[in-house]
Image (cartoon, rainbow, N blue to C red; front, top):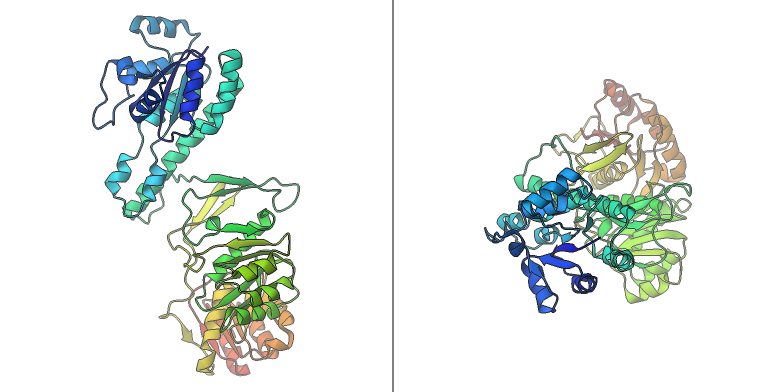
Length: 514
C-alpha cells in the first residue's frame, strides 16, 4: 500500500491535481522548496522534507534530500526481515512513491549568453539520486518522472491502493533511461565547453523519440525517428512540416541527403535526390532557373524524388514543381500563392526550415552504426585545400570554366562511392554512383549525360587507378577532369590526358562516401 509520497518537481505540469488525488487517497505528501510552497498555496497538506529528516536545507539548496532517513525510507525492502528490523531501530519513515523531475539543465544551456556557472548550478544531484534509489527498489516503490504517467498511476491507486509490479517495473526502466539521458547531455555539454578534440574513452549519446514511423526502409521493418535533444540550427530535425503525409524512413534519409548537399551552395540552388543519391543539381541566377536546370539534369530519376532549394518558393516555381510527382520539398520559405499550388497535391510533404542555408556544423560528428558498434568521424566539410589544388597536365581549362570544377567536386562528395559526376554550366548532366569500380561509374555518368557529356567537366571522388576512365571521358567529349590524385599510377592517367588533350586537375582531397 502507498502511504507516503515524496514529491519534488521542477516541471510543475499537473502536479497540483496529482497531489490532490494523493491526499484524497489518504497518502501523506512530503516535499521540498518551491513544490512544497505550491502545494501549500493550493491547500494541500504537505510535510517539508526538513521536518522528516530533522536537518535543514543548506548550501543554497544544494543539500535537501541527501539524507539517510530519505534514502533509507526509499531503499528498504519491505519483505526483508533484516531491513525491517533496521527500519524499526532507526525509525526510518518508509516512502512508497517518489515523484520527481529534474532541474531544467537542457533549457538552461539553450539560453543565450548563459554562463558556465549557471549551467553547473542546474545540474541536479539529489533528484537523480532519489530517482535511482526508487527505481532500484521498484519491487516496493512507485517512481514517477513523467507527468504523462500521473493519470494511470492514480487510476491504480484509486482502485487498489497501490500500483502493480508490472507498472512499477515499467516506470523504473523509464527512470534509468531518463537519468542516463540527463547525464549524457551534461557530459556532452562539458565536453564541448572543454574544447577538446579528443574522442572520449566512454562516448555517451542521447536522443529523444520524436515519432514512430510507418515502417523502415521496407514494410517489414519497424522504424522510429529520434532527434538530438538540442538539434543544431539548419538541420532536418528543426524543420516544420506544413503539409502532407508523415515522413517515412526513406523520406528522412533522402531529405537529409538533399539538405546536406544543398548546404554546399550560397547562390540560388536546387538539389534533387533519389535513393540517397543526387540525380539533379544546379545553380541558377534565381530559383526558377536553378530548379528547371536541376529537373532537366535528369527528368526521369527526379520522379518520386526529394527536392531541396535554398530560396523562397514562389508561385512560378511551385507551378513547375507541381507538374512532377515529388515526395518531399524542403525550402527556407514559401509564398502563400506557392503553398496554395503545392497543397493541391494531398500527399506531397512540404517542409519549412528557415535557417536551411546555414552551413553544416563542422563540430557535429558523423555517426554510422555497424553490427555491435558505432563508427564516428569528423564530417566531410571541405572540398579541397587551395594549397593542394594543381594542374597536372599540359592543357588548361578556360578560366571561366573553373567554377564547374568546384561545383563537380561539391556534388561528387555527396554521391555514393565510387562516384563520377559530369557538370556543365553549374548543372549536373550525368551522375554515376556507387559502383564497385570507377570505370563503370564513369560509363554510367556518360551514358546518362548522352550528348550533354560533350564540353562537360568530370569530377571523381577518388583517384583513377587506371587510364580507362580518362579514355572514356575523352571519347565522350569531356572538356576537363578534376580528381583527388594519389594513386601510384597517377602518371598513367596524366599521360593519357596529355595524349588526348584533356586538362586534368588534382585536389589532394578524397571524398569517399559509403
